[in-house]
Amino acid sequence: MSLVTVMALLDFTIEKRFPASRSAHSAVAQGGERSRTAPGFELDIRLSCEAGVTVLFGASGSGKTLTLEALAGFLRPDRGRILLNNEILFDAESGVCFPPQRRGIGYVFQHDALFPHMTLEQNLAFGIARVPALERHRRVRDMMDRFGLAALATRRPHELSGGQKQRASIARALVTEPRLLLLDEPVRGMDYPLRQDFYEILRGIRQSYRIPILLVTHDVKEGFELAAQMAVYEAGRIVQTGAPEEIFLHPRSASVARLLGIANIFSGTVEELDPMSDTTRIRTEMFPVTVPYLPGRLKGDQVSFCIPQEHVQLIAASASESERNRENSIPARVVEEIATPGTMRLLLCIESVAERGTGLSNGSFQLESEVTRAAYKKMGVAKQKDWLVALPKAFIHVFSDQTN
Image 1 (cartoon, rainbow, N blue to C red):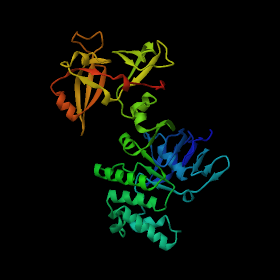
Image 2: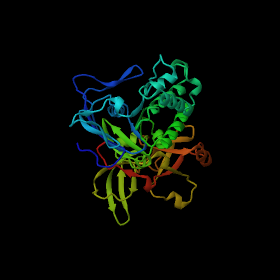
Image 3: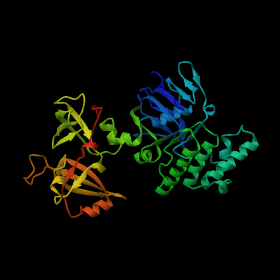
Image 4: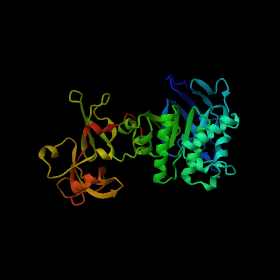
């Protein structure tokens, strides 16, 4: 595997295979537990990151934490290279492998991992023990002030709240003045106020420290809120990278769309292709749909596509004729409503073309729409169950990878 040529502050390729003959364990203890990897698992990662937050997003066991461990020096790859600010930290071919303490990397684990027998101040000072005493004291006091921990300096970890422990863990990682910060699900298990507190802290770090920050998460909302770049993991591979919004609107495959929480995923057959009008006609099992022109596709091709729930629009029967005749409008009935703090998720049952007007429906084909609570109330969805739903062509995305 060749190294990515894009100039970046962090640039790496990592390959690691875990033997199928036994369960593999990572080298890092996290809160008393060791992360486990399925036998036969293979990690094969290539990524470039500039200053700012890059989110590593994917299902559990897809290789996100292993990537952090390899970067930090706790896991030695079989092949590959790791460059940080153009300095080689690891190169399998030449045998270069810096130990963790020489890499200049800060690591915040899923659990706080503070030393229980030390005070908060001692925990922060531990990582810079070789720094001259006066400078060490200055850095520790500055970091405690920055994170609102000065009044807690003499407390031990068991005397701190969850939020205080998390801030202490981040402060301990930053007091070493790292060139790279690794965050492994730092808000896992935290309640909403503590999550928001952490997000505010991370935004401040992003502004104050012009370094790459890798954040592992399962929460797509975190990616949108914090990251300039997202890397989507599947089974030890990065299958898509880009800005979070770009990935959300153009997921590479159905499996990526599902990871992002997109429920409306359909398959169909290409019926018509018209490059002059920039349209392609696809027929699914239940309805036809028009999407943008698909270069390289042929009539009869099987394709899959998606549309995010928030872009599925409801049109009332009382709407104007032009509204009711909008492109990709389909009769549907609301069969279930699910309330969230800011929106209402609507599960819609679609009648097939053959069933329309018969009063019959097998109820087997569903579509989801998500509307704000204000729109839900204004439209009177609670009282009206039969609607037309419009699937705007601009928000329908046909997957480039049709394999899953």
